[in-house]
Image 1 (cartoon, helix red, strand yellow):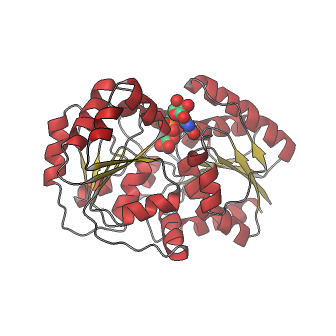
Image 2 (spheres, rainbow, N blue to C red):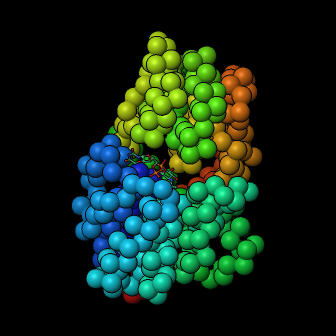
Length: 352
Ligand code: UD1
C-alpha cells in the first residue's frame, strides 16, 4: 500500500515527524512530497535536519506569489506527482495552502484524501486557514480530528462517523517524541516567548504596532523568534529598530522545532497568534495568551489556561499579560500522544 504525504510548511513537518515513523511501523510505503511553500533554510531544511526526516521524494521550488498563484502552482505540481505515483491515498495535514492545493488535485484524480487535523472551526469565514480546512474536509474520504470539539463540528455538519476518527493531536505525539529523544525537560523560567506570523497581525501595521508596543512594555524579559513574514513587515512598518533597542527583548531568527521546544519548555508564559504554539504551550503547562480572536480550541479557553488578547489595543494586550495566571486543571484536550499510531492503523486497515 502506498501513501503520498504532502508537506510544505513548518507545522506540516512537525506532524510528519510523528506520522512517518508510524507509517513505517505499519508497513505503509510513504512517498514524501514537499510543496515548497516554506523554502527558507530555517523554515524547512532545518526541520528535516533536526528531526531526521527522510529527504522528500519530490520537492517543488516555484511557489512564491499570491494565495491563488501559490495554490495553483502546488496543485499542478501535486497532480504530476500523483499521476506518476498512483498512490492508494493522499495524506494532507492541517490548514495551510499546500493542504488545500493537494486535496483538490488529489480529489480531482479520484485519489482518496485523508485529512489530519480535520474539523477545527472558527466563525472567521474568510480567514485563510479556515478556507483551506473547510475545503480539505469536504474533499476528504477519511477525517482525523485532533480534539473533541473538532470531531463534534464534523458530526454536526453531517460527516459520516464511520470515516471520522477522533485520534488526538499529532503535535502532542511529536512533542513527546522530541522531548524523550532529545532530553528536553520542562523548567520554570522568567521570560515570555512571543511569536507572531498570522496575516491578520503581520500584514496589519496598526495591529503589529500594538503588539510591538505591548512587548516593549512587557513586565518581564521577552524572547521573540521572528517568522520571515513578520520580519519583513516589522522592517517595512518601521517597527524593527524600536524592538531591537529594548534591553529586555531578544529578537531571534525563526527556530527549528527542537530549539523552539527548549525555549518554550523553559519559559514563564507564551504570547502567540499561532495555532500550533498555543497548543504546545498548553501541553507544556505554560499559560498562553492568544493574539487573535480565532478560538480554534475552545477547550483551552474553557480550561482557563488560554486567554485571548485583542491586538486592537496595546493596553488591552498588556492587561491580559499582567493578569493571566491560570491555576486550574489542564484536561488532556489533545489525547494521549498516540494519534499518529491510530492514523497509520486506520489507513492500513482501510487501504491495504
Ligand atoms: C503559513 C500558513 C499558516 C501557518 C504558517 C506556519 C497558509 C495560508 N498559512 O503561513 O497557517 O501557521 O505557515 O509558519 O498556508 N516566506 C518566507 N520564507 C519562507 C516562507 C514564507 O519569506 O520560508 C514569506 C513568503 O514569501 C510570504 C510570507 O512569508 O511573503 C507568507 O508565507 P506563507 O507560506 O504564505 O504563509 P505563512 O505566513 O508562513
